[in-house]
Amino acid sequence: MRRIIIITKLKPSALQTAVEIGEKGGDNGIILLSDAAFMLINGEFSMKLREANTKGVNIYALRNDVEKRGIKVQPFVEVVDYDSLVDILLETDMKTINL
Image 1 (tube, rainbow, N blue to C red):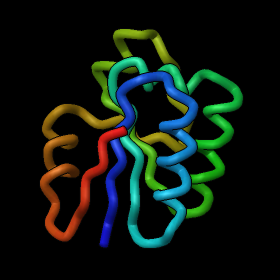
Image 2 (image 1 turned 135 degrees about the vertical axis):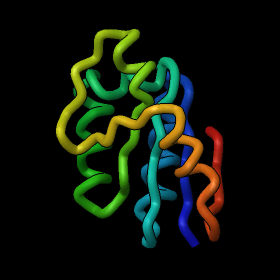
Image 3 (image 1 turned 90 degrees about the horizontal axis):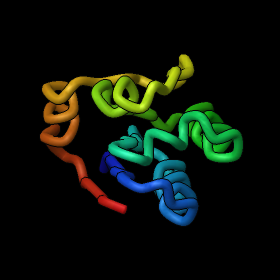
Image 4 (image 1 turned 30 degrees about the vertical axis):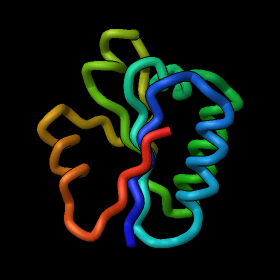
C-alpha cells in the first residue's frame, strides 16, 4: 500500500517519523506544507529528505508555500500546485498520514 505523509510544521520528530514510514517500501511520499517547507533549506532536514529520496521516497512541496517563503527548491523535490496535490491525495490504494 502506498503511503503519503503530510508534514505541516518544522518539527524534527515529524520528519524522522515520516522518513521511517516512507522508507518501508512501496511508492511512498512526503508532502511538505506550510512551515514544513523550511525543511528544504535547513541542512540537516534537507539531507534527511535527500537521503529518503535516494531510497525511493517521493518528496513533494506545495508551490504556493515555497514561493511565499522564498525557498529555492532542490532537484529531488517535486513542486506541485493545489490541483496536483489533490490528485496525489485522492489516488486509490493509498493511506494518508498527517504528522
